[in-house]
Length: 122
Image 1 (cartoon, rainbow, N blue to C red):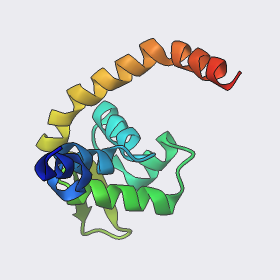
Image 2 (cartoon, rainbow, N blue to C red):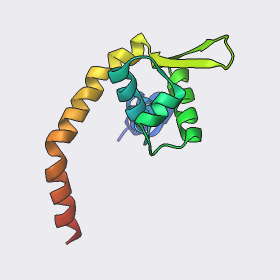
Image 3 (cartoon, helix red, strand yellow):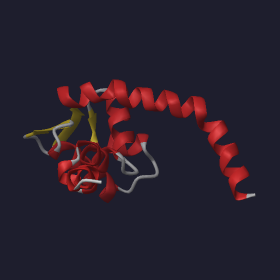
C-alpha cells in the first residue's frame, strides 16, 4: 500500500470523514442537532430538558463544539437576566437530511442489531 493511501484515513485533519464524524459522532452532538432541527430556536435550559440525561457541562461543551464548526448559531440578547438562544445554521440544516437518513436506518434495523448482539454474546 502506498503512503498516500495509508494516510488518507489515518490522519484525522486530512480525512473529511473522520474530521466531521469526530464532531457529530460523539454521544451528544447528533441529539442536539436533531432537537434543534425539530424544535427550531431553543434556549440552553430547553435543550437540557429535551435531553434529560446530558449534564449541563457536557451540553455546554457540545454546543460550543457545534458552534465552532458552524453547525449552530448562538445568539446572546443584552437583557437581564441574560438570554441566549441556539438554532441551526444553514450548514447545520444541510446536514439534517443525512442525519435523518441515519435515524431512519437505525429505527429500521435496531431490533435486528440487538438480536445480532445477543447472538454474538452467546
